[in-house]
Structure formats: C-alpha cells, structure tokens
Image (cartoon, rainbow, N blue to C red; front, side, top):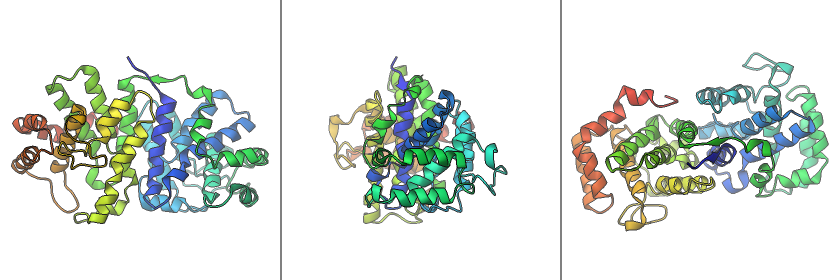
Length: 417
C-alpha cells in the first residue's frame, strides 16, 4: 500500500495556514510564512546545537505554529510586531494538536510560542520555563513579520537585527538572540528568505523524512485540517466531516474498493482547504453573495488543488477534492471541466457537498427539509449539472443520508468534534 511522508504532508498542508493572510490581501505567493518561520527556526537550532529529537519537534511545530490562526481579523493583528491578541490562537492551536497522536507532542510548544521571555504571559510562565522550541519559534515568527516583502532584504537586515536585539531579555531569550546574531551575519541567510525555494531548503533537514503514513493515518491529519477550515465560520462547523461521511457512504453503495473508500474519506475532509483564503465576512454574510464576492469564493477550490498536488501520491485525491464544484455541463468552477473528464469520485463529492450544504443553516437561510432537498437535487441532475446516478442513490435513500449528517454516532467519530 502507498505510504505518505509525514513531513511532506505537513509542509504542503502548512501552506493552507498561510491562506488566512491571503484573505487580508497579502500576496500568498510571496508569503510562505510557515515555511520561512520553520527555516529561521531550523537555522537557529543548528547554531544552538539542539539535539535531533528537539530539532524534529521544532521543525513540525514551526510549520504548524499558526494552526490556531483561523479568523481573518486575528491574522491581521499578528502582522504587527507587538501583537496584543496573540494568545487566542496559541490556545486554540494547542487544543487542536492535542487531539491527534501524531501532533500531540507539539501542542505544548504551540501553546507557548508567543510567550515573552520576561512576561507577563497568560500561560503563567517566563524565562527558561518556556519550552526552548517555543522560544525559538517566537523569535523566528517575529523576524518574518518584520520583513517588508517589497523592499530588498539586505537593505532591511540591520533594522531587523537591531529590533530583535532591543527586545532581548524582554520579549526574547538572550541565548536565542545570540544564536540569531551569528546566522544574521550571513547574507545567504537573508537571501534564502526571499527566494521561492524555501520548501526545497527545508527538504535538506533529513531527520524529518523517516515517518511514513498509510491512508488511515493520513485521515487523522486530514481531520485536523478539516476542523481548522470548518471552524472559520459557525455556519460551516463540521461541514467537511459530513461531506466525508456522505461521500464514503455513496462510494460504498457504488461498490468502490476499500482503498478507494479511504481515499474519498480523505478527499471529503480536505475538499474545502482553500476556504481559509476566503475573508470571514463573506462566509458569515447574512445575505447571498454579490457577483464580485462570488468571484472571490471561486478561488477556494483552486487553492485546494494547488496544495494537495504538492504531496506525492495524492494526485487522485487532489482531483476528487478540487473538482467538487465542477459540473457535468461545464458550468462549474474553477476549471470548467465537463462530462466524462470529471471522475466519479469528484461527482460523488459534488453531490455530497451540495446535499450537506442543503441540510445546514446558512447566514441567509435555514437548512432545507428533506422534501425540498429531494426536489433541488433532482433539478440539478435533470439540468445536467450533477450526476443523475449518484443523485438517485441519495434521493432513494434520503432518510438514511439525512440521519448520517445528524447522528450522534457520526459526530463521535469525528476526531475533533
């Protein structure tokens, strides 16, 4: 069975976390915040001779340090060097990572990654009581925030170095600052931060390449990111989990193999990854989106496709997930794929997404009754938008599928509910 590299998955999915800044109008292509924080952290760790186990934890924690930063308005605050509302996302990130066996050891690092050396901190600790990995990530995070992407990096380095040193002993651990000062002398360090190849540089850290995941283990990681995306709006809470459940049930009825059923569960969990690029106010708007706003919404599946295709072995899952707004008649988005080019897995996800959305409350309407959902699905099928064979399975078993989205058991099966 195909195995997936944990580090490759985390590297790719961490880019999803940067999408929240894209919702603020920051150029996502030049952002790479998670990767840059990871690279700075790893360079400091090398200078400090951090042991291999701690370095591995630091690598993953740095990539995931903003796992709790979900809301656009909170992300805006983090773009200021002296961020004042920084503990909320630390606490949220800690709670998210504690729920998965592959990330629970990172949770405490994330909780403390905005703790100031001299305090005061909401965690109640200061100085050497703060985990060393948290201290390193904090300074790395603030260094990247200080960089002005439109200016030549070597013209900024002295100002950044001075700002860091002026906060040594108050915000930052003096020992970590001393290590930073050593690497900050190198022009190559700064130039590395301005290339588009930060991910390639991170691949040089071989201690991260040993952990391989199967599909069942991949699902646990997918559940984390599904929870992150779904938490962006109260109206989409558990949406990805429900889509995953419906898609898996449909796949079984369509005689998908056990492996294909595992694949479609993961695709369902990850289908809305790109939603982090959508501003909060659009997701919570108490009315239907305007034409211009809908154009912004269309980018979410594009980003889902871009991110998932970076993981070797996820090409089929990526297509199923990213095509969930494509329609058989070519009226979908963002690729306007049509007909037989759309794989059955993507058709299943399209129907699952529509069905699940119809059951859910939205800012501008309540969830529909089963009778209304039945009529809407049949209309989409008769117009050639959704696969009629898949729709028929849902409408013929609508009570079963409706209960599946509402059952207590299905909620208990969700890792992070």
